[in-house]
Length: 365
Image (cartoon, rainbow, N blue to C red; front, side):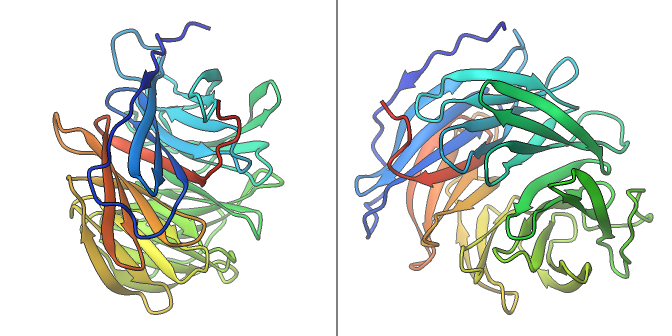
């Protein structure tokens, strides 16, 4: 396997903000799409520090474009998707502590967002097909156990699938179709598409994956199940709404106004709060799930906020911000109790996929 030179940069970078009010021990991983870079940071009593970075990829001159990123539930494997290829992209497996590349497997056209099953055996990757023709694409299912990294299924879904997330309590996987305005449900055990739901006004559930009616304007970019699996929250990047979908009834229950270009969503472990990145608004919204009311909108340091993850105690939201042009990307830590930003650190440009885990870090040297 011919890999690009993976020069690991050990960095001891001071935080760009004040110390957090409570002791924390969070490790954070982020992918910077423009420079093929994966970064590991630590947020603790000393603030937010960049620990190390590594470059990944196979293309000699063009960016490979690392986009999606997720940690296995046991914290021992880091999965990263790269969207660009010749023409197909890859899913990579890395050591999360050292960022050393273990192996990779070729998937579909522009593999993007991804998630791992609770036992870490399966990884679900949405093949976004960003640069290809507007035709239905797929979700790849990869078996990742021991020395094996193998695509075992490629499930046709819709045009421009994105936002791969699992409802652990129900065993259902959700993604959205940015071009077709649909929510797609996959049985994560039987590995088959079970239902699709049109997301435009007046849409009715069906079991197909055909194109949406002309004029659909949701342009969904994310599907986030609630912790109990009862609800699925959908970010409508086009119509600037958050939709609440009743999963058992398979129907849109409520539509809430959202921030400009709402993009990614995360839900606190207690299900009380939804955190949304506003890609065109240079901000992050805190929304009360019970009412749909936006209770706070926090500005980000740079433009184009992208991904968001929440600490297991529900205290902190950690956001990746792409930046514009030659600007670096940033990782920003938001205190959801105090409703303010408490730490930021620069990473590579076009920061996107992000995940976190409380310490200690398994396998750390």
